[in-house]
Image (cartoon, rainbow, N blue to C red; front, side, top):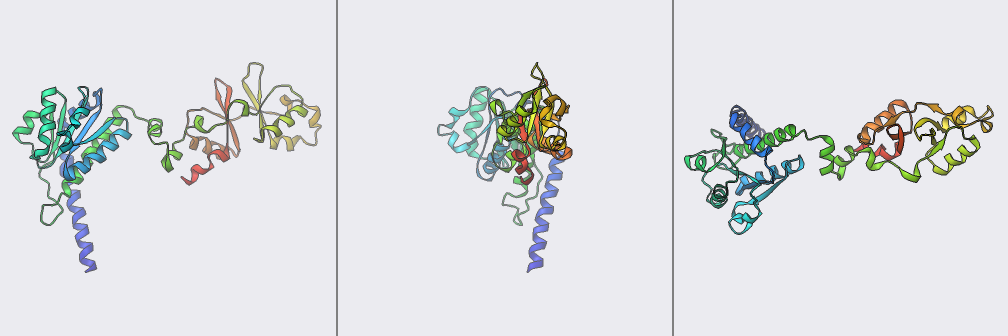
Amino acid sequence: MTKEIIKIAKKVIKTEINGLEILSKKINLNFAKAVNILKNTKGKIIITGVGKSGIIAKKIASTLSSTGSPSQFIHSTEASHGDLGMVGNKDAILAFSFSGKTIELNDILIYAKEKKIPLIIVTGNANTKLKNIATICLEISNLKEACPLNLAPTTSTTAMLALGDAIAVSLMTNKKFSKKNFYSFHPGGQLGKKLLIVKNIMHSGKKLPLIKENIPMTRAIIEMTKKRFGCLGVISKKNKLIGIITDGDLRRHMGNGILEKTTSSIMTKKPKTVDENIFAKEALDLMKKNKITQVFVTKNNKPIGILHIHDCIELELA
């Protein structure tokens, strides 16, 4: 019985893989036209469908929204009972119906035609009716369902999902959607930690451990103790970062009359710095590579923040 279950599972997966290979061969100029329509949409992308197609449509709406293409799922039946009011003249509609005969879709399809709203239909049966009403038909036909009865949507829903992902990735690539854009939509959870930007976690303002050049070390040590970062940034008369004094610098000079010296003679020149717009993970990698525990954040060579290794160490666990 165990061997039979494994055999069935492998057959299902193989059947769906074959379906995806068939789908891949159908990606043509129509697909490119559909992506360009969605790319140039000034409003939202309205995603609709019912049944299993509706479930896939919900996932695709979520993927599109999180990758730079604002989208909204509307259940086709609910559209007929008032939700058509959510569809604006600047929107585009992406409808899913594998059979191509879903009666519940009629109202939203007719509405799109009447209002001249771009309509892309993903279907396994691009019949004459759909071709006449749609701006673009994306056909995913000739698929064998993995269901042994060839009835339950299996291969067809996998193909729809893959096609939706292909649309989303094509759009985000064309829109030059970046990791920083992605973070702005995913600030929470483990993914959010990995995509944190330096400026969102750095210490700034009065917390910055800074001191002018040529200041007596007696004052510098007091300031370093007060700020508790284990370092001091040394700035010029023009407030540019020219050096750094760390706990290590203090220990190295402790027996050399350090209290009689100035910040300029003790500091390490040209300290490592980072930009506020890089990922915190990149700053962490820089600190680890250079075996330092803090790094100043600068803009036009002026310190605007500081990041301690403890501020982003959790990112390694994300």
